[in-house]
Every structure is written in structure tokens, then in C-alpha cells.
Image (tube, rainbow, N blue to C red; front, side):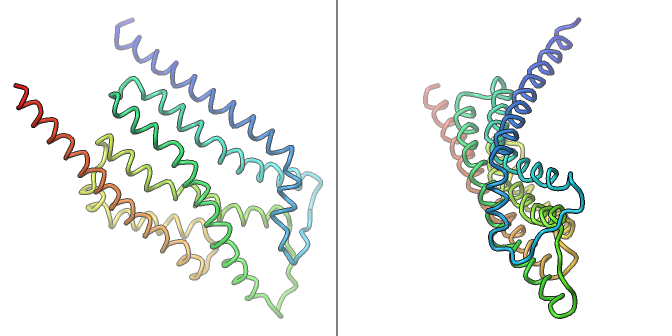
Length: 248
């Protein structure tokens, strides 16, 4: 084997190890969440005025796994980010290592913030609007599976989408992107965010607007943060050039 082939094998082996650690962590959190899932289930339906129906003996088990899965994903994010950092660590300078490591707590916080926004703002607004359409016209009955699928579809995507500002800052600090690229890609990004919003929400205008507007604000906020990081990076580079000239 050539040196390049050996290096590739080593990288793939390291990547495999990081993925295995992340997967094991997810499974452990999934099992741990499943132990308390009945209490979590009771809390999630505490304000629901309708009784949830079960169409089959395995449906409630599937619901429990959905709830446990979301919790396990949230708890695994910091671990997955740390494993990613360990994988790319050898290619980073000492300053880049410290900078990128500091982003990990923010990933978890923003994910929880996104879930909270989806659960406490978007989900109840959309649900009450849809229920108002059937008021006096239909007898409303929910199945557990459809109710929690609806809830998760309106909350889980926000957990990931709220990561956008931090991911943009991270990629800007590494030099992968810059604010000029983000500004040029604004139209395409807006289109993609609108498509994502339509896909994750029920087919009504109010739901779409409730999701689209925060996502567009998040994108503009990300562009602003990218500008801040990019300016600091340019300033550091210019300071380093001045120091090198003085020492020479």
C-alpha cells in the first residue's frame, strides 16, 4: 500500500470509531429515556382536551420510541459534536481547536431552544388553528401515533434549523464560507428554506408563515454573525502580518 492509501485507511478507521462511539451514546440515551417515557408522555398530553386512541397493541410502543428517540437525539448532539471535533482535531491549529471546541455547548443550547420554540410557539398555534376549522362541524378524535407524529414534525426540525447560526459561525471561522458567499446565495437559500418550511408544516398558509418567517430571520442573523467572525479573522491575519514585518 502507498502512503496515501494507508493514510486513507487510517482516516476511515478513525471515522468509523467516532461513528461507533456516537451510535453507542445514542442507544444508551434511547434506553435511558425509555425508562422514563411514560412520565414524559403524561407531561406532553397534560393540556390535551381530547383522548388519544390506539389502533393497535404495538402503536403505543411506537409512540414511546418516537418520544425517546427525540430525547436521545437532543442528548447525543454534544457527544456527536465532540466526536466530530476529535476527528478533525489533527488538521486544526491550536487556536482553531480552542475556537471550534467552544461551539459544542452552543449546539446543544440552540437545539433545545429550537425544540422549545417549535413546541411552545409553533405547535400550539398550528394545532389550535386546525382544531378551529373543525369546530362544530366534525367530531375530533386523535390517534396517539398521528398526534405525536404531528407534534414531532412541528418541533424536531426547529431543533436542527436553530443550529444554522452556530454552524455558519463555525464554517466562517474555518474559512469554508464567508459573508459574501452567503449574501450571493440569499435567493437560493430563501427558496430552500421556504421549501423546507412547506414540507414540515401542515398544508395551510398560517402554519407556513409561522415557520418561514423565523427561518428567514435566522438566516439573516447567520449572515450578520458571519460578518462579525469574518472581520475578526481578517483583523487577526492583518495583525499577524504586521508582527511578522516588525520581527523581520
